[in-house]
Amino acid sequence: MNQKITRFVSYFIVAVLVICLIPANTYSAKKPALNKKRISLQQDSSYKLKIKKGKKKASVKWSVANKNIVKITKKKKSYAIIKGNKIGKTKVTALYKFNGKKTKLTCKVTVTERIIEDMPSIITNSPAPVVTQAPTIAPSPTPVPTPTPIPFENLVEVNELAESKTIPDIFTYIDGTPVTAENWEGRAEEIRQMYQYYMYGMWRNGEGESLTYEKNNSDLKINIETDGSQIGQTAGGSASFTVTVNIPSGNAPEKGWPVIISMGNLTEQETALANGYAVINYDTSQVSTDSAERKGAFYTLYPYNAGEWREQTGVLMAWAWGASKILDALYTGAGTDYNINSDFAIVGGVSRWGKATAVTGAFDKRFKIALPTCSGSGGMGVFRYNPNAVVTQTYDVSSLGFMSTVTYKQGDVETIGSLQSSGEAYWFNERFKQFRSVYLLPFDQHYLTALYAEEGRTCMLIGGFNFDVWQNTPSLWYNFQKAKQVFDMLNLSNNLIINLHDASMGHNILNDDVVKLFKYCDEMYNGIDIPDFSISDLQTTLFELTETPAGINNKEVYEAVLLE
Image (cartoon, one colour):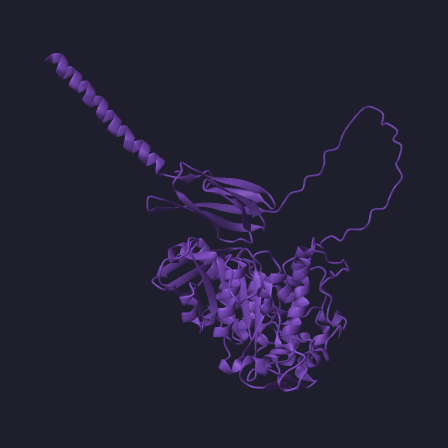
């Protein structure tokens, strides 16, 4: 009997020990973690960020708050390889899901300047050997990128610029270096600096900022604080603005809903939602007033200083910054909260917001697609194409299904003088007011479009006719033709498209525009073959028509004022 009791007690003790151990091991296994919570990387260096104690059946979604600073070059369930790109601070997040539970793992990453060490000297006491020199053959010069660091060393004052009545050559660096596919990235950066220096003012890329968000149903409040570490940035600054998030009904795709960030309310919101696109309506007035007062969240953090060009950001660029902050919030976690695919973000706007849209995608490369609509002069309209419509042009536009013809004549289109008037000058910086002739501009607006020439990104130029001649739509087609040369050089011919609609239906992004956009996205990015649709359909316009019902040769009219 005593032996039975002893044996029972022994079994009981062992069982208790096993039960005690199992929860501990299970609990430990359920606590995944990153191998680093904080790391420092030099530019162009990489690091393998690993998930420790992860489950094989778990799912992991990697993201980075600011892709300009850090890029994820490889993603796996158990690790991600990150690469330092631009000096600054950001966060890399792994959203870990297992058994219905979500765990957000974050690593703070600081990217520092790349240090190039000198080669060590080789010291030897032996006599130097005599070397027979081989014949010297001069190598063929290879064009290399021109370095374009701040302080914008290659740029001169407006009064030092030479007039050019021909279109500026996008395929030549400022110093004369020829542009190639291999060195285009350097030229693109040079162009971004030109736009900041001469026109739109300084782009703020998030350095010295910290961002949080608050989700309240469809309202997303975005809070930004600044530490004053950047020129013209408020120390201890704090500002916020709120956007409205609209989500389609039904089940989201595996990666989440693609999203359209609209400056102002998207008129085709219901069409977008029905096609599976989330819509974020962005009230730009909270970021900056549309006035010379320049009041709002942006200017609270970056006050405008008319006496110092590095502290001047025009309102268009300020609105672009706001769109970028929305994307920051999505990458920080709001995208996960709303089940939005932050990697498939589209930005759109009309008229002055079309101009701001053009700037947004040109400076924040995280936006996959931009829809600058009816943007006109200062947006995607080329300044030098028939400026002020001094040559009267009449086109047959009956193919759009409303009016038969439209005429452009002097005084009917937006000019550089309009942009420099008191009602619009605040969209730009102080230096832009000094251009008394479009022929002094060291660029033209096809330069802005060319900044979208990158794998996985698209610019869709949208313009209108009839009751909207102000935007000078023929100059938009000229932009497309000139910018496409860059896309073609980079083997990205399908990444630039254009759609011209009948503006009698409204000064907006119209149904015709979004329907064609969604077909394009399915064909280009979603691997879906759309019947009776070709991307090439969005690379031709009525300006190429030689025969029309009105007997007008549109192509001849258009080409009569071409610049070479």
